[in-house]
Amino acid sequence: MNQVYRTLKIRLPHRLVKERANVLDLAVRKLKELAQWYGIPYLEERLHSTVCPRCGAKMVEEKNRIMRCLTCGFSDNRDNIPIVWAKKLYNIKPLL
Ligand SMILES: [Zn+2]
Image 1: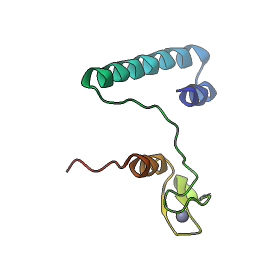
Image 2: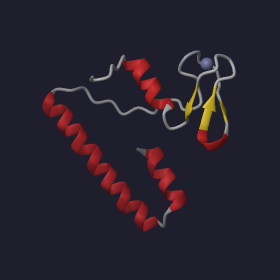
Image 3: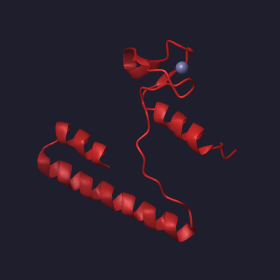
Image 4: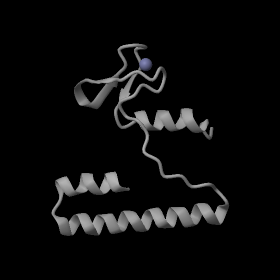
């Protein structure tokens, strides 16, 4: 959550940052409550976006936020890398 708040501070006037942070805090709080209600463990964690999820090497950024691993060849959009890490770390399988 702190990372979101810092990112918003850079781009928006303080009043809007505070309003949006409050909305995000509320959304996170409601998500935690729902998870608790259904007995689902809740974990808020920041995952890597510049470390290769296949081999652990440092990745380089190319155009349009594409990250590439020069060691194993893995590449994906920088915004997707944490999702790949989450799938790997928590053994998340597709629902279908
Ligand atoms: Zn790699």
